[in-house]
Length: 76
Image 1 (cartoon, rainbow, N blue to C red):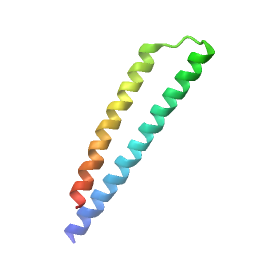
Image 2 (cartoon, rainbow, N blue to C red):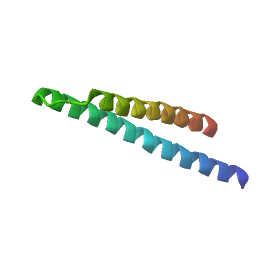
Image 3 (cartoon, one colour):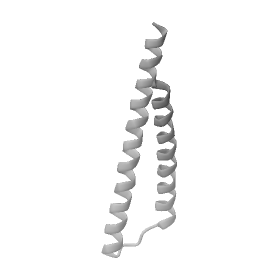
Image 4 (cartoon, rainbow, N blue to C red):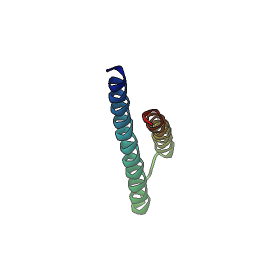
């Protein structure tokens, strides 16, 4: 019984961190798309703000990928 509960928790955590990873990938793609569009339109861009947001999202993406790998290894 305990083993099946552990597997359920691992699968739940794997799904949650997988969804967070996908959201980070979508956010990075959106940042890049909007940055290119704004540069092409000649708009002023607050680069430190964009850089900080990108670094935070990349950090979260790296952490969530390590969590996904961890839970995949634990399921095996």
